[in-house]
Image 1 (spheres, helix red, strand yellow):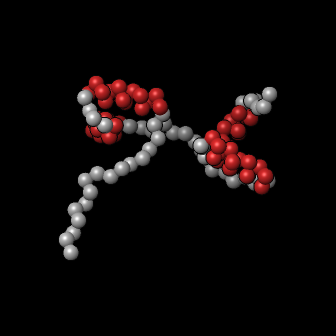
Image 2 (cartoon, helix red, strand yellow):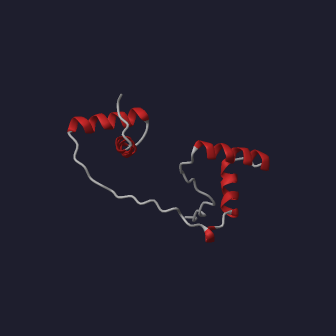
Image 3 (tube, helix red, strand yellow):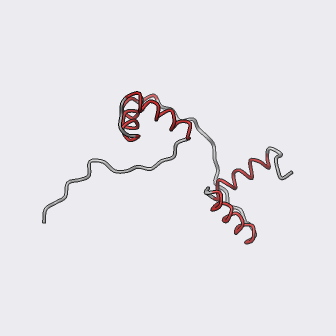
Length: 103
């Protein structure tokens, strides 16, 4: 049985802010490139990985207990808003800490 050659490329999915995606699209068109993949490959070739220093953001994973009704509501809202439960929890905690709430 013949051995299949390894694929040359493979899809990689990641999130980008829409504003950055729009900037990349503008650069893609100006450079005469055909796809978003091409502009990302170019960005990777030109990026200085040696001098890159990530901006540290301190996070801590916590575990909380929620009443079943509240957890179910949170899950439903996450589906409705098309976000993760964690994102809604962070938004609620951040809003509460900033003194924002239902008016």
